[in-house]
Image (cartoon, rainbow, N blue to C red; front, side, top):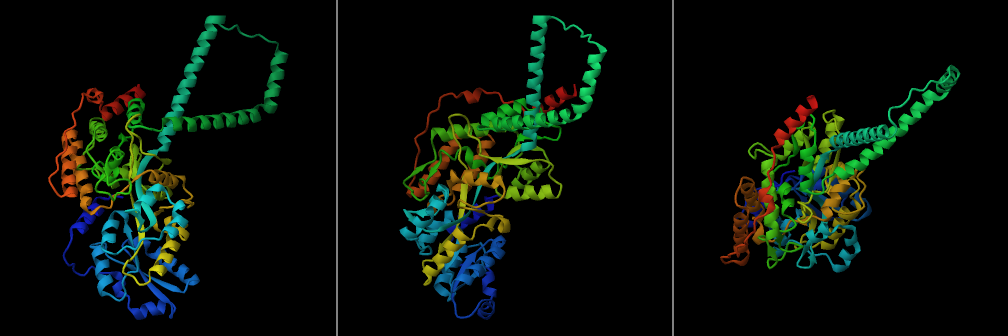
Length: 529
């Protein structure tokens, strides 16, 4: 998933103040009479807005399931994502059938709350369910110490890798180590005992051994082979765990050692044009609004750790050369499916695409998900996450009914959310039947939720531009300082100047990064020899 389009849209929403033309709300095409024929008469009715068509069937089923046990009918209405909050506000003031609740991403919660469109949960209600959510989900729906939404589903990025390639590399390492050990043992034995003497036993003994071999030899060979295979499999699995990169430095070391198959074009490749896949490089050291992303007094974009992280990011362009004009998330994922990439950074949608490709015979490998690697032993990383949540409209006169359905939808009706929509629930305890999705949940748990502050709504667009310029060689210190001054000027409402961070010469500047394509050619030439 690329968030670029969504981020631009949210920036536009934050700045919009003019009336909007008709946005084609699909719910407006459903007459009240049609709704009455679909649902039993005589029940209280609540309207539920959403913008993602992939949720339509699922929400319809949830509405029916809820209506079977409650004296309430829920009417889901698919709305346009353009000027979504503005349309909710307009409908809340002008329409009899206002949205009683709606789905929105957590970065829009401040705007919703300040417009009166978000009714906070009571402390008691939140206490009853909050333990079912990771910290990232709790923080995502927190604004000024109030909980103003029910976490529903999330998106974040993790490391996706070709497990088949790592297993093959691990096996080759183990076999090479065994061969080396056997060679050393044979040499030591030769030096100690000299050459072996030929054994000249009687024919009777030889015949007896032959008979024994005929009786139990075949079965023994099978047993020995099975045990040897199981032992090798266990060793390979253990070695793969050791090979998994915990840092970017580990990936660079792997690239230097890896004897890549002919089809592999890149050891590590990701969409460097989309901030959602880049943010983790500096995510642990960019503080935008504090843990909950709601405090303009808690800002720290320009700091030495962030500079050091982005210097490593910039240096990777010398090792993993990528044409930013040609790259996209979709192309990277397709290259991964074709076996051209060992490691990449992906979002949750990759799992469904890879499983579908395997079923169609288009993906001939095994894959796995792992945490995004840290920069090194000192500089840590954190992915960005966005949480879509269910919010009860502050203008609704049926808030208690809406809150009860929101709780049902997000806490009790999530078992089939992924299988029917491709969305990963923002809560614990959901069995996806796929360990890779659980790895995304683990990454989400420690991720950085998108901030909610209206004053910083353009931060992601500006940060993406800064990342692109840094990748292409811009001075990291200067560019990050300029970004911070721009955002802080918006936040404070007056010109803001950062104190320049003086830097010492870093060892990373002296590292000579080899060309990955050249490394691959050299490895292939060695194999051919």
